Image 1 (cartoon, rainbow over the protein chains, first blue to last red):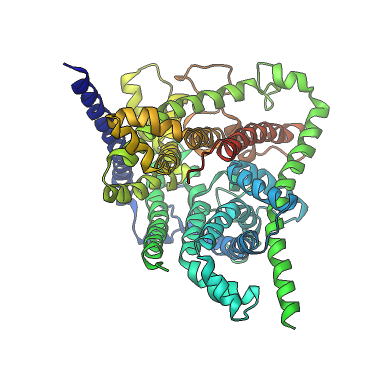
Image 2: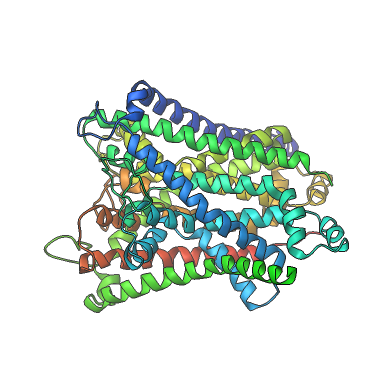
Length: 285
Length: 292
């Protein structure tokens, strides 16, 4: 075998190794989804979704966890979206060069890498104790909102940066103020990319467990929360609670709850990918 | 009128941006103040040298080393799994795969990172551990190995996606020059493309390491609750994050020395990930080659 054929052979080898890795990643994902669906899907029925938690696995349901997740989703959105998008707009459109702006930049990059459990410790001290929210929906939502803020900010900035300068200049030339330009030109043009980022961030919040455990959200909540000050549980907490129990019935329940949580998360990711593709196609300035 | 409105809007947006600074200051203050209370009772020297961590037992030891060992062990296993697979994927997608394939596969792989970690924990405990026990009979039900492997699967997209972005950003002309000299794709990848994208790749790997260190639910569910100074992947271990969960979900009273341990553990975790994230940020900023 001469050198050239040897090199071509090695090249082929790397190609097949790459295919193997890519396929392996996908196969693990599929295997893992199928496995959980097989375990969980038989347990899902209307009663499972509308029952309160119970000591008996066959009577237990996810109503409180599901309602808790919906509450957290809504409250976290209300807190995180205006702040995150606002901060993103500020950093892209208003910020003047200087120490403060560099600091903001580095700071956001760092916050995005802080482990979620650390946000839990922050939430425990600030929202649960100092502001005295207790282990309530409000404390949980504020904690999760802080956690996903960097994701929303980064997504907003990237979306705004993709809007061509000429659009803004044309708007200024017509005598529009800065805010008029942002609200009538920049934001509409970047909306679908911003929404993509927001949905991905929220899907992260919906799946989070660790910070909520730390702020003292309960694993067993026998009632559906009615106000933001009520105690709560969410789907991931309920799953964690069921996984930690020895009885087989609860493991099946955990698998069933996982199926519902995954449907929720994948649905959100699907919308996000769809919007992203649409945004990429549409923009041809 | 309109000027006042513009002014108010700008200030409101500025305040939103400022919240991120408050968050960081808040994290540092909370961790520092609570950890300070802890270090008044426990000497810092004991904290970093004692080989036992038993704050919840009657005979208390406060050595962080066992928790660090658990964190280190699971992280090393995760990276060992994720690095070759992630790099293989990124090289294949950027250098070999047809663009249409790449467009479909990338979002699918990113789903791996979208799956909630509690779900991965379930998977590690219920599927991977029993499976590995058939191969390695002495494996404990809770162990560092399966938690590490599953964590590795979770961080694959961090490495594959970010490294692929870095490889993809290398200009075509560099590759074409290499091809023109008669290089195969493999030679081009290892001698031209990867060196040119090395800062982005390194940054992505460091970010993945930091992610693995801070990961909580997988190790809490599948690696066990036994802090021990061991590097044996077959035994149960406890990571820093899993310890914080254990105390938080128990009924340790607020303000007690036992409870303040989670802030001491938390500040260790924060410092560790902060250093890694900063290195990653810095490499990306400083060593990134800008092509015209």
